[in-house]
Amino acid sequence: MNDAQQTTRPLGRRLHRPACLVAALVTAGSLAGGTAVAAPADRAENRTPAVSVPSDPMAAVAAMQPSWNLGNTFDALPDETSWGNPLTTKATFDGLKAQGFRSVRIPVSWYPHQSATAPYTIDAAWMARVKQVVDWALQDGLYVEINVHHDSWQWIRYMSTDHDTIMARFNSTWQQIATAFKDEPRALLMESINEPQFADATDAQKTQYLRELNTSFHNIVRNSGGQNKDRLLVLPSEETNNAQHWLDDLSTTMTSLHDRNLVATVHYYSWYPFSVNIANGPTYDATAQADLHDGFARVHNTFVAKGVPVYLGEYGLLTSPYSGVVERGEMLKYFEHVNYEARVNGMTSAVWDAANDFLNRSTMQWMVPEMKALIQTSWRTRSGTASTDNVFVPKSGSIAAQTITLNPNGQWFTGVWQGDTPLIPYRDYTVDGNRLTLTAEALARLAGNRAAGINATLEVRYSDGVPWKLFVRSYDKPTMADATGTAAGIAIPTRFNGALMANVESTYADGTAAGPASWTTYQSFDNFRADYGADTTTIKPDFIKELKDGAPVTLTFRFWTGDTVTYHITKSGDTVTGTAS
Image 1: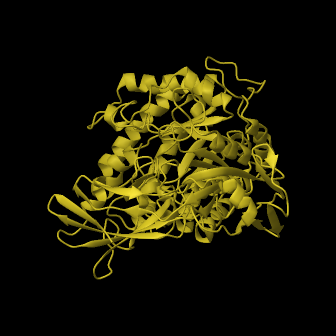
Image 2: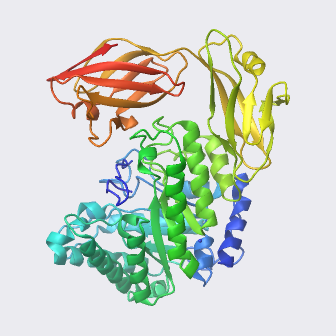
Image 3: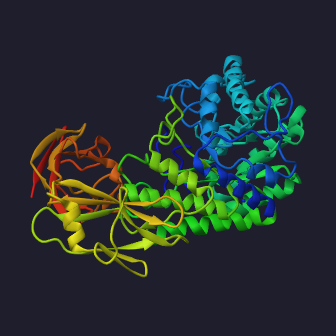
């Protein structure tokens, strides 16, 4: 993971899969209960016991499903704990195995521990530490992948201006890694480079540079002896992007190497406007769904359908899943869908976990049980969703019946429950096709005294998969008050009154976009923080620094209730003044 830009969408995320394949993925479905996975009986008997790797590369990569990234750890700069994660221990992999994962990707940034001049020697202590954690994971019966990670944008990206030096350093780096790990079992995979990108280069040059790197990596590892002679080697597309021309370039390279033990890799962080909630993309809509479906179909048709295994080395969102940038229900729909598309397209999927986004690094338990259930269930089947996970009722006045659209995803609707109590059909709700209507009487009962916020939690249950939660929320229109801040941020007093903020539109007096993104008036929601407990809306410094001095800005805060609140701010030097309409 890095700050590169993908071809089809900007990439501003923070640093913090034939019949044998289907059979293996169906087997992976037995993990959905979250129990520990028994190691295969035919363990390789060597100094670091590991799984017995099938000779068929497709079967081997299928056996890696599901996978997890030890993110922001050995790729952190400059050291393992620099980005807030604890030291990795054997217990890390014990916990990972107990949660049902079968493989781990260990991204490694080498350059902070490597001389910057020839012969580009990697620090022996760093190499030994990486090897220690790899061995721990292998001992737990996990497949492991290591790579060259943030080196991609720290020095490799400058090939157009320093080609020979970079090739020499890249070759030296892989010669050292390949030698150090040549006797590890075949359950260890090696990936040439993470998210390759090249500054000031044409598409033709990018193709040439990546082909040089991938080919050189392949030659070095294959000629380094030991288990490297037939180890699975992972090669990325440009930026690990699924654009067809980059996939075709990678396919051409892989074909030219005449090596059956090769694996293609891509990453996926969703349709950019949805992934960071920008350009009025707060929902996982048809465009975002098509971006996923079409992209994975391209990968399948280019590789999997032709017998080349694919490792989805990273997937997630470009913002933390629990930051509130992407609304909870919309986020869950995405994670359900991405795992489904990976499964039906025959790709082994590795969730990107930067820092306690999914698993607590101290306990190796899931941070949010609901996310655990959703992802683990997706390894074997789909879960039904709905058009929303919030039903808003007014804090005062009459309450009307409300209708939502069910998305069964191949399941069938079985009922609505509140805890252990089923709601009564026709009295509490009706169903017409995929339209679920909650009656006015039921909503009035569920809303109770209509205190602002969640009054009741319902479950829409389907024939299989994880139930879809519906939150009955009472609300009134939000209000904001005048405030003063600085270039470091401004906190606007906000009475949310039970409403939830969806996104923000930001314009100057002439209607042009105000803020970091000049191409859309709907700025990334990561520029703002709605703190419902503190009753404040904070505008962050990265947004403020991009504003014109002395030019009034109109902010339109949009809420999931359908309400909007207009607010005005003006930056004057280091002072920011906010005025409510």
